[in-house]
Image (cartoon, rainbow, N blue to C red; front, top):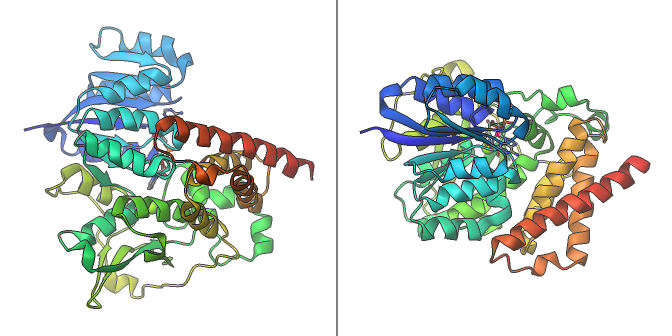
Length: 392
Ligand code: NAD
Ligand code: MG
């Protein structure tokens, strides 16, 4: 039986890796919908290759190009934010949620509400809507399969063991390009060096998040939600080799870990074939050649984003959503050359302080309107904080 699948964010790094696995196992999958934001030519090429029922492009300017390229193909197409949401709503057995940022929340929710499994790469959606998102999935009988490599590793290491017996979980972090840099060096970092991740090849936003370690901060929150743990039972361990992706410590002193080459196709394949497994063409892991696996404690002085994320989650209410949206704005400003690298975390901290003063930690976050309001609040505050930073 073929699995009907949808890929949200089909032209991105995770979308591409997903379709690579589908390409190698073409007879097992039927593609329902593919979506993208601006890369119209890439979306057209994918549409003609995978023959989905429909494609949707966020950017309305691509309409003419889609119309001419897909005329007579039998593939439905549409443009705009609502079109992406409608594509996500089409019945599918499995949806890859791989739009970057909070922009992925509405399409991911639409996919969750049609009841097929959600392979969740879009951690930002979960960070800002947390329990509400998972409750919505539960209400529609939607299974959430973690794709983030660390969370996928933890899910595998938890397997059928009793949650009650878990002492803590450990998310590994590569440490990013500035793992051994001084604060002074980080202050001068260029966009190119910040984007040059030592072990993983990823989209721009997550690459910068890895350099600030905000990615790991977001992942702490993601793990607390996915595995229903208090944040003090979720640890971060720097592991520059990116071979061990996640570990679980049990009450009897046993540690279970998942290992693999740093290739996102492994966790994606795990989610795509779940509860079975599928073959994936991954470079073999040669531990004898690697020889040594290194581990170090994270440095929260040079990487304050870790502390900011933990504190935002612990404070509760809308603070995680503010953390996320303020970070998105600050990362975009860094990528556009408006602020320095260290100012990303400074901007986020300023926004969180103001959000606490404004009582957002008291918000109940029991409806999506509150999630969207907290997201907008964070974007507005970050805009102000950036203006102050740029004037200074
Ligand atoms: P990317 O930038 O390579 O791709 C992002 C995708 O989202 C593109 O297809 C783009 O068209 C789409 N998109 C962007 N803005 C949109 C909008 N406003 N509306 C509709 N579509 C939009 O990003 P990526 O590296 O593939 O990451 C995607 C998600 O997966 C992120 O949430 C990231 O944190 C997560 N993730 C990525 C990796 C990785 O290795 N790349 C690992 C773990 C988790
Ligand atoms: Mg990760």
